[in-house]
Length: 435
Ligand SMILES: [Zn+2]
Image: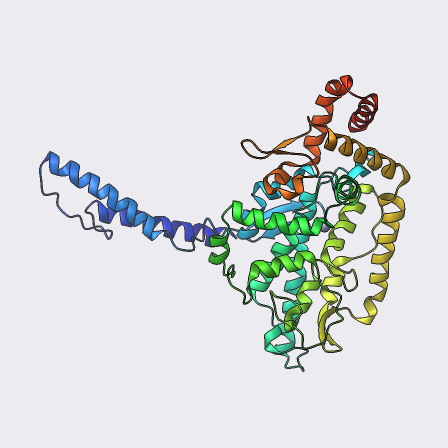
């Protein structure tokens, strides 16, 4: 029954297209036929013209917002959040090479070599964060509308009311916040990169995510589609691309005067939106909600924090002249459980002794590969670069994943036999772990 409106809509659209066809063939769409007037040759010419006319009219009659194809939401079955429904623009972003690359990047780096269940990747985590970002921003909006309806004293003015554009941007920021992770996640940005490029600028995966988000939008020509869904992609005023990138970078620790504009993408009345994906004020954000739940699920560790409850009780409050996402006092126990889970995950998994040892070996193998001329990434017809240089070339970085590295190691184990024994040792150890 739930499919009926969709089927009816599709049927109407089909009838419209068929009626255009009938009109072009000289038939009245309502059923009254026009008589053919001429010879065989005239018929052929008429047929060609009719076909051309049909093509043009069908094209013109496809709705500017074709509900039945472009606007269709997609449902993903996620092991943590269940069935989640994503906006078509989010689906379009997921269906790009830059996003699909996350399928090949291990969420917990070397953790999979210690915990056999920890085989999950950045891809599913990013989809989960996009979903939770949408849940939290919609819950805050519902709370705002509730307050307005009940005519309570509003905690904010109309400028701070969340609109559809804000919701979509927050979801995109959640979805794309980890686009910049390199092979084995934090092994690449936290361990490999500082040693491979010691004189380089400070480089974090958030910066790479912004770099890759720009590449994703431009390489797939997404701006027209973003505009189609109401986003603003040009100019200095409320530019949504700027807003999304600022959210990926995270909220600022606010020490600035109240009247100073904190962000470029949105005014201070909406500064609380920056606390949803990456909250630098207190560390409570949907990124952690997803990875605590997902990592615990795959590691086999208990998670006592209930992020669904947090979302239900969250609201925006004015704290010392600034709007922030706040929780009720009775939610203290739930938040305590969140920080306890974090502590537990670090002690038992993220800083696990053997996991760290494996990651040091992976880092050493990456460093050796970085110095070896055979480990080059071909990113254009004649352009090659090393692993540490890849972060400066968006096409090369799109190709740099953990899975490819394992394959290279397997291939080069025999190749490097003729080189230093140290390299062979590192690679063989790595391959043993990879098996
Ligand atoms: Zn994340």
